[in-house]
Amino acid sequence: MRMLPGFQRNRYRKGMVTASSLLLLLATQTIAQSGRRAPKPPQPPVTTPKTDAEVTPKTGARDLRQKVSLLAGWEPSSKQLLSEDAIFKHFLHYLGGFKNVTVISLGDLKRDAAKKRAKRETESIVVMLQFDVDEFQAGTLILNPTDLDVRVLVFEPRTGQKKFEGEVYYKAVGGPMLKRDNWPAGTPIRITTEAVAIEAAEQVRDWLVIEEVRKGRR
Image (cartoon, rainbow, N blue to C red; front, side):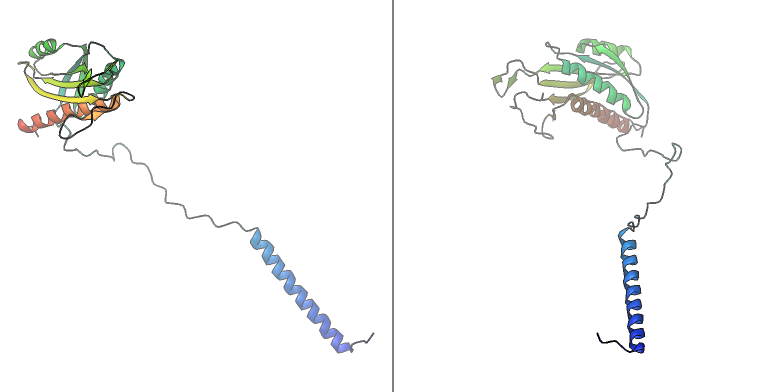
């Protein structure tokens, strides 16, 4: 075997040491990078929730500015369906949720009784829901009908005069689909008891707002 001169052996050893050091450095960087975690995304600034004093509700165009007291009753249909009771309960809830409106339930109330009650009142307005089962739809007799015509009535205190009459149609889920919604040209149709109650309550609220504007109280 041929031996390299001394200076060549020294140069060869230095080259090997340099190459080994370079490989060790590269391997160390690779291992470090493989175990490095991805930087966390910047966090949004923390905001402090506003207190009740800092949050001021805006007065909407459909909010009443004067306090109004309502007496609410309902006249069930001949079948007295469970949906009627549910609609009236939701109706009371949403009426009482309007700004400056207080509601007292009168329970079952015939139309004539509602008029007489309104005559005895000096401030409170009497409102009622009148239910009627829709047994005929498009000329067809419906067996075990569950759809309802819901009439909304408002009677003036002292005089007992009817000042407003609205209507909402309750289309029970799973019932015959013969009647179609042609709102705003006709009666609004709703398919849940809550939606019917909201529509009826909003009709009363809108009438109250119109009366407030007419009397110049806004």
